Length: 287
Image 1 (tube, rainbow, N blue to C red):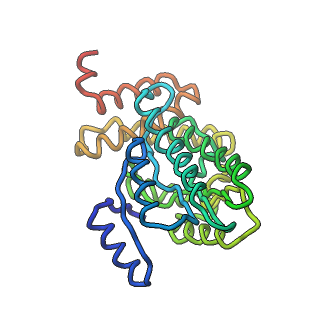
Image 2 (image 1 turned 30 degrees about the vertical axis):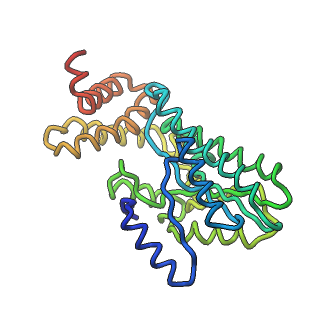
Image 3 (image 1 turned 60 degrees about the vertical axis):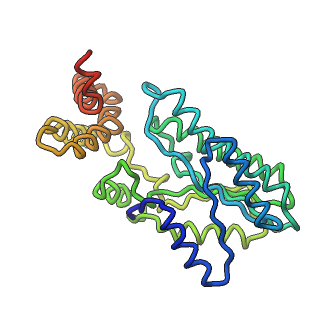
């Protein structure tokens, strides 16, 4: 599924559609990595609503990094947005509830069940949110249920081509992408079931159970994957600037790490060099 850019116009349109069912909808804008914005959001919600009964921590930052190239800024922003913000909003939510059927639902990621070394800061923030979901369930009982949803391939990210996203979806056990309605159905399930708390359900078409890892599919097949990536990166000059950057990022995040793990040192060095040349041409000239 293609992700549409979030715009004020688009949100106003959605608000209008939801309001047709006599649903009250309020819009508030804020950066979850910034303390003043978090406080502004809470203050706005308290003003508009008498009390809270459901909080869904959905928004998150998803940027590419790994141990070799992460920055302090990226690390901090991922942790502030994906972990501290849900914790703060949950704290404020718990102060303004009524009765016992209240829910906090954290949107996590299936990768917490199947770890990889890429998207390091993002993965760490989501893994911590997974733990927070369980510890909050212990702390906020019995009046608040706290659960989580770990989605698989649902919406194409900005760094993916449609072809890459479709290939990712087809690689799941059910060979299909996850529909947004599947996520919504799980939210309804958590809200309507009064006996579940502290649980995280993977809504991922079985992606986290996919057994096609390097030890299963075999060395020869992984070398074929590397060969395809190497051929593609070597013909960058024939691509548009946008495709060059896209291919370089894909190679840096997928093919180069695999080559390193397989001990294909010369290929890994070549891939890293070509990717660095494409993504950081000025620095490459200096070095």
